[in-house]
Image 1 (cartoon, rainbow over the protein chains, first blue to last red):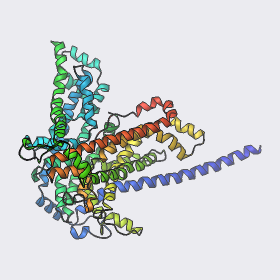
Image 2 (image 1 turned 90 degrees about the vertical axis):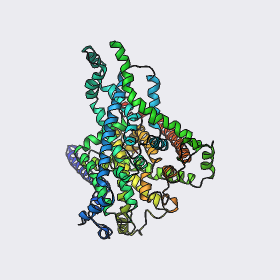
Image 3 (image 1 turned 30 degrees about the vertical axis):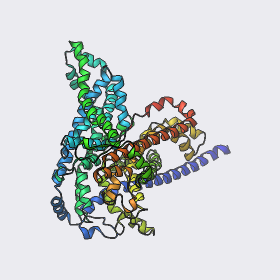
Length: 293
Length: 323
């Protein structure tokens, strides 16, 4: 009898303890997560604050936390010092075209690797894979020299065309197409009288949408952010992309960073907007691209 | 005819890729090897290149004042910029994976933000954050009574500043990779550990870490490849080529040295030689990483066998090169 009475009392106490422990644990966990939230998010807020301030009001102690009133001044200085609209146009044009061409040709090649048998396929594919493992800077000097010979530095060519030969893209698309395009469907399309190219367009592309989204996201982010190649290939002011233009402007700013920060903030806006609306897809696409092709 | 078309089609499909691949991926590699054995300034056609044999390599390895220094800085940054990411990312992923947490997507989004922005844009922001008198970082450390540090102008603090930026950029990326890995670990493992009365830390040391090993290997490999190529952050933070990495060359990384040889010194051959030596180093490190991972895997074969099926789900493909 006594045990029966004790039992519920004991339970109540342990439940209470558990609850306290849980609340306490939750507070700690949230504290950690929110601290990191601010560490990662605050610099993005900071850049927009600095973009609206002039030399005097940027360098204050404590550092500024709210917008200033020099937005228009900074805007004028920015466009006076560098052809920012052209830089933005280059960045967008290169990122969009590089993504489109890379996705199209890599899907095409991936389709061939995944769904056809041809001579040398067994040698060619592993050979392509090896180049994924090599660090990018091996290509920097020879590629620059080739572009100089072709007389295409300061154009979009060096930023777009070599991306078609991206081994990672072909590997990724081959993996995706292997799993997502059934051979039966291709055979059925053949019996219906579709040409091989029509099969690629009407069966291959639509069915590998998931892979195309993954490669497209990675390729766009990569092109938009690329610095080393852009810096080496695009040396004229009006040919530069945003990262190169900003870096150059920053080097010459002599502490007057309001306009630089404005350029920086404007360059962040397109990618921030895309990220706010499609964050879930962008994150999962980029992770999918790296963790499992 | 029909069968024939089917035979020709794959060649047509791979040809655009393959032509570009041969022209801009394979040929440059050979060209780079050629250059690393020649002296050439990039001027006056390739015929002016002089054969130099192993001169570049012997110069770099035994005589050059910069080479070993840049390698040292790069490895220092690899340890404190790239490896430390994982020390933050794994616990952070475990916290983010906790059942007690709501609003995971908001955190995921914020943590991922630095990944999709360019290194240049980030470095420009941090240049202001690192400002000695008016920067955010010194303001915060000042609250705790720490004397102000001129982060990007003092030789001892330049590598730390660069490491902070690298960590800041990639912790979120690794956190989300580990989070994906954590979600693939079967819950039964934790449940049976609960029955055995295992503490929280024991559970993570004995279940989480071993189960994450393939992903840790993959993520660390990516960090090695990325970390060995660090250029953007030191370049922007230490004001370009002029100071060659700031005070006492403290931010002069190996990739920075390659770019400097190319753009400032006009030494194409030496630049290529550095690139190949650096590649060798990446290769060695990847093998060491694999050896360490395999060694620990050997320790935990029991768990591996139990979860052999689930393991496939978190298997990994070759790495993508984001840097």
